[in-house]
Image (cartoon, rainbow, N blue to C red):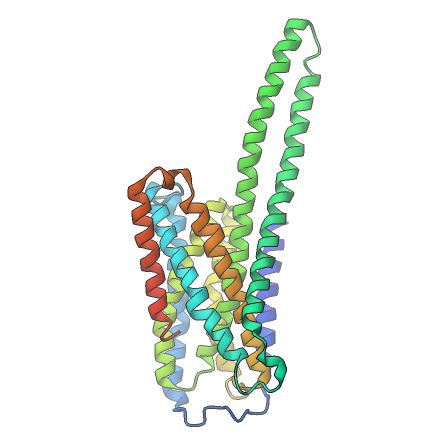
Amino acid sequence: MRITRNVKVLLFFLFISLFLIAVSAGESKCECSHEDEEENKAGANKYKIAAIPSVLVAGVIGVLFPLLGKFFPSLRPETTLFFVTKAFAAGVILATGFMHVLPEGYEKLTSPCLKGEAWEFPFTGFIAMVAAILTLSVDSFATSYFHRLHFKTSKRIGDGEEQRGGGGDDLGLHVHAHGHTHGIVGVESGDSEVQLHRTRVVAQVLEVGIIVHSVVIGISLGASQSPDTAKALFAALMFHQCFEGLGLGGCIAQGNFNCMSITVMSIFFSVTTPVGIAVGMAILSSYNESSPTALIVQGVLNAASAGILIYMSLVDFLAADFMHPKMQSNTRLQIMAHISLLVGAGIMSLLAKWA
C-alpha cells in the first residue's frame, strides 16, 4: 500500500510536469525567438541520443553509491565518510537551487516576451518562497502526525502493563515499576520511529523537487537545436545527475526503506532526465521555448523546484547534520564536512555556466 502510494505521487508530479510543458508546444513564435541561433538538428541529435544512456548511467551510479552501506560498513549512516559525502551532496543540491534552477526561473518569468504590467511582480522569488513554506508544512505536519501516532501506541503499551500488575503489593509494585520502565523504552523507540518516518518524508519531498527540475532540464536538452548547446548540456548533465543522486541516495539510505521502495525511488530519479530528453526530441518540431505558455510553465516549475531544493538542503541536510552530536563533538569532522560542502557547492556553481 505504501509503495503504491509513493509510486502514484511520483508519477503524478512527473506527468503533470511533462503535460504542462507539452501544452506549450505549437504556440505562435514570439518576436524574442533567437532566429540567429545556430540550428543543426543532425549535429545536435547525436549528442541527445548519446546523452540518454549516459545520463541514465550517471544517475544510477550517483543514487546507488550511498546505498552501498549495506555491503560496505564505511558507507553506512553515522560514519565519518557518510557525513562528509552527505555534506558534499548538500552543497550540490544547494548550488543547484541557487545557481541553476532559481536563475532559470527568473530568466523565464522576466522575459520581454511576457507582456503586461503583472509580470513586473517578482513571481520567481514569490513562488520559491511559497514552495519552501509548503515543504516546511509537509515536513512539520508529517512529523507531528507520526509523533502523535507513536505516543498513543507507547501510552497504550504502558497502560496495558500497569493493568496486568494488579496482584499483591510487592508484585504490583514490581510490575508497576516494570510498566514505567517499558513505557520509557517505548517512548524512546517511538521517538526514533518518528525520526525515521520524518527522514522518509524528507527523501520523498526531495525526490519530487529533483524530478520537477530534471524534467525541465531534460526537455531543454531534447529541444535544443544547437550542437554546441547540446554538447555543453550533455557534459554538464552527467555530473549534475550523478551529484544530485548522491544527495538523494544519502536520504534514501537514512530512511531505511525496504528493497522495493529503494528500487522504485532510484528508478524514478534515474529515468526522469532521459525521459525529459526524449520528450524534448519528440516535440522539437512544434516546441517554442520563447512562447508565453512555455516561459510561464518552465518559470513556475523552476521556481517551485528551487524553493524545495533550497529548503531541503539548508534545513534537512545541513542544519540536521552540522548540529548532530557526532559532528559537534569532532572538530576534525566539522572541518572535513565544511570543505566537502564548499567543494560540492563550488563544482555545481561552475557547472551553472553550461546547465
